[in-house]
Image (cartoon, rainbow, N blue to C red; front, side, top):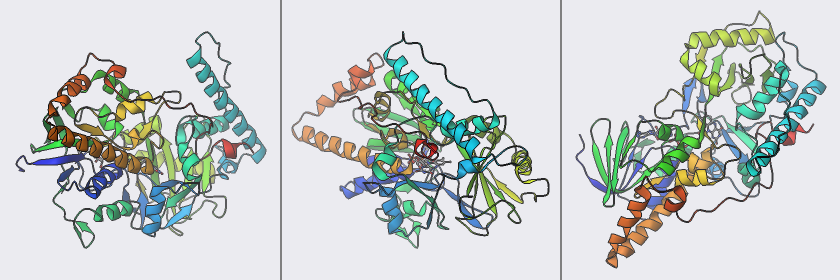
Length: 495
Ligand SMILES: Cc1cc2nc3c(=O)[nH]c(=O)nc-3n(C[C@H](O)[C@H](O)[C@H](O)COP(=O)(O)OP(=O)(O)OC[C@H]3O[C@@H](n4cnc5c(N)ncnc54)[C@H](O)[C@@H]3O)c2cc1C
């Protein structure tokens, strides 16, 4: 068992945000840190597994936001590592919508449904905006999707990737292109590369004793003097500060307790953020029976039940000859699929595939079902802020509490939900912490360290409102440009 030893900073979590945070600390001369990671690996939601002879991405699969006015930092890391990627063109998916008898809907019908769904989503946004401004306004009724085709399109627009209509800052800043990672080393090799820059490694293995795997943090005690972190195996770590990078799902769970408890404005903000569950189910076949070639990578299944095995992808572009299909389910369907056996999920998927491609197709020989919701170190796939929520929520989630600094994709105001969001959030959080460390040093040299005490009393107080307790917050500008769900969004939807 480790004996308590005091370091400058404890970073909790070794996903992309925890690692980028730690790297910034080292770059600024803070070497005495410890990273406590609950699982037996680094990477968090960037995670590959060997399946059917190739490497598949259970978590993040795409580098989203490429080709725009600014370089996406994750794309830059990918270029440096010569990561193998494939451009994803979703624009044809709507021409590959199958009904339950295996017929593809004519493109005109698909186009009409798309337009209807987009108009309805824009109307919903307007109604919500007006309702937020003036409660006396009676909202116009929305057209509700009814047919399997309408339900499939509605699912893709609202629940597939980012569930709501929103301005997608990633596209505005970094561009609208998306690249699927198709590299045997996995997306995670970017994170190993980053770790190599500041942790001691040998022959591709991290040997640095500052990285501690299998350390599940269960309690964070904090006071004006420092923080004490206790792990499930009874180890105790002490530090001046903590950088907490666990997911929003973990923050909403009771895995980590805080002493004293987090103030109410903080826990309320944490509760307000939705957690999206996104599950890619991988199926391996003895041979391919689905259409391949340009414009055929993605296809859609229209069923009376919304979100029922709706969105499909063949992996031929990524790994030719791999004979793998991926079907994505989200939220309620994800939770349902996680709760049942993989055999049951395989049976349901095969029924759906036989609807689309006929009774003679071969059975899948293998299945892989990631369980992000059941994983107590994740409790979901990524954050999704409600559409008309003001930026106060994300700022409150991000705001430090005394010596605890919060980071992770969910703390990124502009890029939450993405790998680059996590990466940039880690950098931001460490910069804020370094600033505080500098101030603290100055205060100490001026003999004013007592000033921290009233501040902690304020932020720790349950009786204060968020506006009283949080300083320096600003409202975000209202969105000037609106986009629908990234992948199959408004730009493509206007046919
Ligand atoms: C299925 C799926 C698909 C996705 N697709 C994409 C995509 O295509 N493109 C994209 O850009 N993004 C995608 N994302 C989102 C992206 O993966 C995340 O935004 C990003 O990886 C989050 O990084 P993070 O550092 O904030 O959190 P994490 O990677 O979750 O890191 C947090 C770490 O904290 C650890 N931890 C948790 N609890 C404790 C504890 N008590 N003690 C110690 N350690 C703890 C966890 O094990 C984890 O390693 C996807 C995510 C999922 C799940």
